[in-house]
Amino acid sequence: MRKILYPVQEKYIQSFRKKPDNLIKEMEKYAKVNNVPILSWQSAEFIEQLILITKPNRALEIGTAIAYTTIRIARNLKNNAVIHTIELSEDNIKTAKGFIKRSGVKEKIKLIEGDAFKVMPALKTNYDFIFLDADKTDYKRLFKYVMILLKKGGLIVIDNLLWQGYAAVATKIPSKYKASALSIKEFNKLFIQQPNFKTTILPIGDGIGLGIKK
Image 1 (cartoon, rainbow, N blue to C red):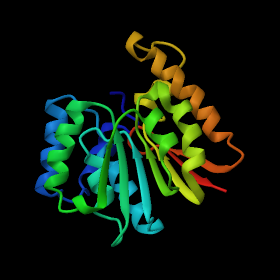
Image 2 (image 1 turned 180 degrees about the horizontal axis):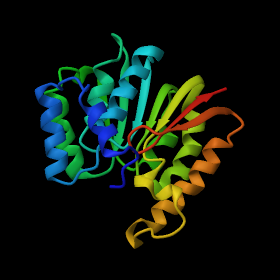
Image 3 (image 1 turned 120 degrees about the horizontal axis):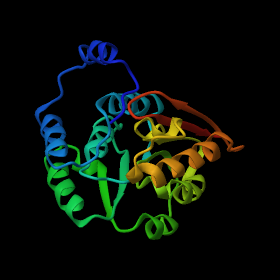
Image 4 (image 1 turned 90 degrees about the horizontal axis):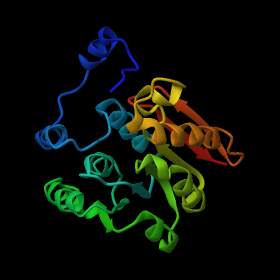
């Protein structure tokens, strides 16, 4: 992974990280050992702060993976608030269910199994907060549903908008990243130019997109 920060800066910021609890440490270790992409801890802490600030009643996550971000969001939701999270991979679903069961906030989490392109059009509710972290080549199509499901004044957070640094370069992109890097570049233009959103891209983790629906 290409680094956004210089190593000395990253090490300095790392020194301030609060020690995560045992479940979060276990999930981070599992993701590393099994090569499951999860949100960076810096981005996760940023999202936790956003949840505490905005106090959403209903949150939606597109791309559960092993429920790392799901659980961190749920733990910071107010009482009676919920997060719906969508995942297609059967292996991820099985692992996520195990972690959710042990999270202490399983009553705040509804795991929806299936293809987001089929699930999202069928959702009958709007959301105060949406987190998008799915396949990068699907971002543009998924964002169309986000625009419908997000309430006015609601917040959208999108991960990987720097895409390991490859979104910012034109050459020397490894072949396995070329299609996804192009998709992210195209999505970033679409995202920033949205007339119905106040948007920005922040150099946190692998690049966080932040948008408020007008």
